[in-house]
Image (cartoon, rainbow, N blue to C red; front, side, top):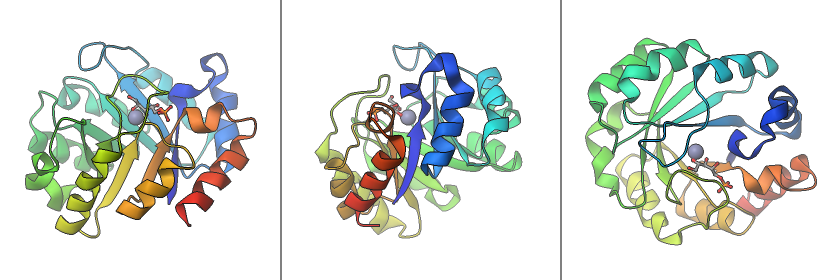
Length: 213
Ligand code: DX5
Ligand code: ZN
């Protein structure tokens, strides 16, 4: 199981220290939640903040765009150093064009589905997607409760394309990570579960152990 540390739960007054802390604590990827106040009822940070964090780790930047127009803004996130760019199936951008743009910028494209969106929404694009993110909470805020019903979507996606990476995001702790692992999840995003733990390295080790790898 790969663990992508969600910086949304970090101390924003010390972003460089927090990135370094995740790097040495064994996070596999750094998850960056971008919110525009339209697609979700919350605002976070954009390309300049991501570019400012980029020099502090070599770990992949896993950028989760919770924005209305990913096609319009993706070039700036690519320039800021995104390795993976995840955009939502429910956004207003054309998925084919958005995938093309991400690929042409040398990054890996992924699509996300909110809890109310069926897995089949991303089926037409699976051959070009590196990953699908199945949201296990309503996007917008950290610290919410994991929705176990979403594991059906994970299984459906793994059946449709066994080598596709499936990520889940929201409410991951040592119990829910095991449930995700059983369903076939490859990458778990965790914010609160890592940053609010007394020892981040131990929290990441425990998540991986609970997932069985
Ligand atoms: C929610 C974000 C998540 C969030 C997860 O919209 O996409 O990445 O940080 O937070 P936890 O792990 O606290 O549920
Ligand atoms: Zn996220």
